[in-house]
Amino acid sequence: MYDVKSKLASEFINHDEILATLEYAEKNKNNRELIDSILEKAAELKGLTHREAAVLLECELEDVKDKMYQLARDIKQKIYGNRIVMFAPLYLSNYCVNGCVYCPYHYNNKNMKRIKLTQEQIRREVTALQDMGHKRIALETGEDPVNNPIEYILESIQTIYSIKHKNGAIRRVNVNIAATTVENYRKLKDAGIGTYILFQETYHRETYEKLHPTGPKHDYDFHTEAMDRAMEGGIDDVGLGVLFGLNLYRYDLVGLLMHAEHLEAVYGVGPHTISVPRLRPASDGISPDDFSNAVPDDVFEKIIAIIRIAVPYTGMIISTRESKRMRQRALELGVSQISGASSTSVGGYVEPEEDDETAQFDISDRRTLDEVVRWLLELGHVPSFCTACYREGRTGDRFMRLAKTGQIQNCCHPNALLTLKEYLEDYASPETKRIGEEVIAKEINNVPNEKVRNLLVERLKEIKGGKRDFRF
Ligand code: SAM
Image (cartoon, rainbow, N blue to C red; front, side, top):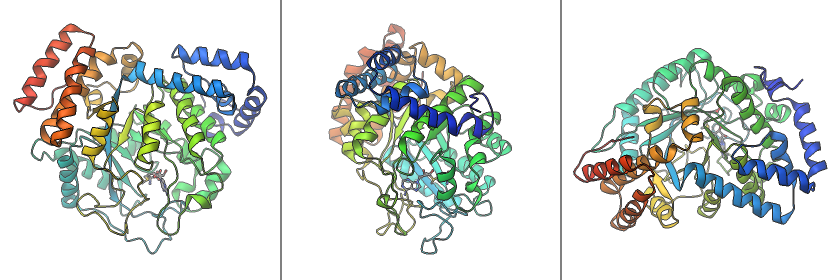
């Protein structure tokens, strides 16, 4: 039985409810009256139910698609302004005991060179990330209780936060590690992590079990109920995602939104972020073409726009799995966070690999961070290296309240400009610096509160004078 408030995966991600939703969507895909009312509701920033979102996904009317895309753009602008938050992944270890068929880290891949970074190697990786200008990372590992136990993760987080190279600092460590226990989530919370991210890969149980034939990740319920345990452990910023291209995207989009509804219903706060990774070629002969449900670009765009309008207050993340062109499109449809200059190899920031022998998957966008920042500026976005919210205790429902009352503009916008200024002073090329300064000068005027605006101008001067790490 479907029960949004149940703590059981089979009830809050209920298979029959998903099938009924897909049937409802098919029946109503040309129901103009219904579709208009769905779009009206979305325009009021009320979000959409999984059933409403499914109808939009099925709908093939060209004018509706245009309206939907415009709406996604408007919602992003209204809630997040033109800010784009920057981050990079940091791979600590590719030891893994799972059998995920789409990931070359899988246990049976005897050709994968296995590496686990020492604390000294982590120090060097973090220094390299700081020297690019990164302030926020997503920590990644394979699942291996012996080689990558929670103690290793905790020690690594401590190391990462402790490194202050020149003016650099990693101020927010998000964590993307395998589903774990409430006790371990509590330890991660105590270590001061930002968001706990875990991709569901697919919500379709049978497919999930086939794609994860062996290892602890095989357990669909344990994986799907991970966010409930994370919440119980005190982590109130959690990040969801589906690995698009593994299963029927219709089923997965509905499952993803049901998961968000479940978190909102039980904990009063939906996911902090939703990622939209798409399957990439990888070593050990892994190719998206071998999976029968590859998601074409036009459908992928529609998925992004629908997520944006269905969960307006949730940050959306797109990684360097996607090309520059697709990332530009995603930014127009509501994405609010992107990675830049990423390496998916263990130790790859210090020693880039020629043959990607420890890489998790191929990267599509291989530009430097400076190039990505300049590109964003030229497109009219404000690249933000801000990490203020969780450091000011604005997590979970406190963050959502801020977002929902529109206060974000007096807080996030000045913080974005302050951190962009730091980036320009410390890391940017002359051309990026020139464009960035112009953007800052213009964007100061978009801070509504006069007091905040004046203080911002003061702080910007202080950053030029050498001070760092201000925040509102
Ligand atoms: N090992 C952790 C777990 O089991 O959830 C998470 C870390 S893993 C390094 C991060 C994500 O990379 C996975 O959740 C998966 O969605 C994604 N991934 C794995 N293989 C991929 C591929 N070939 N192409 C694109 N993304 C992939």
